Image 1 (cartoon, one colour):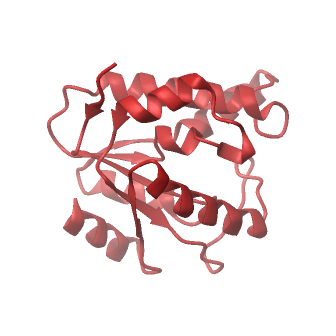
Image 2: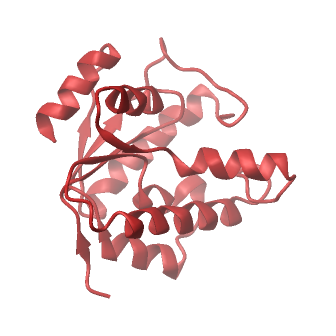
Amino acid sequence: MTPIEKPNFFVVTGGPGVGKTTLIGHLQALGERVVEETARAVIREQVAGVGPAVPWRDNDAFVAETARRDVAIFDSLRGEAGRVFFDRGIMDSYGANGAIPSPEILEAVRTRRYNAQVFIAPPWREIYETDAERRQDWAEAERTFDIIRDRLPTLGYEPVVLPKASVAERAAFVLARA
């Protein structure tokens, strides 16, 4: 498949509990088109139905389902000409939680291309929090950031670290670069 380049698709990524979803919500409140994190939806559905596809039961199934949904969303928005901000992207499934990327994920990462600049939220202890869907501890949040930051260039993306600032300042930072 020929790569689909979508320079108007912007990804916000990073470790758990560091303000990604809050930023995406703020961008939406400002009138921007956003896509919520698919991993949270997968976890909610699997927990409600006692399914296996959650990171703490079957990480490979979780990663595969998250990637499948991310690809479907990307493909459904191919015709979108305006800016779209994603709470995580397909590349987040590449090696997620230590999983070995499947051929399908490798192909999806190669053929569905977001803007080359990927916004990454750094670990920030003062705002870090866990919840029912986000069980990772602080050390894992830090490790996840390091893994994502180091992996993005190998996938052809430039990590742009968000400032540790208010959500409004973070949104202004993102919008100035999008």
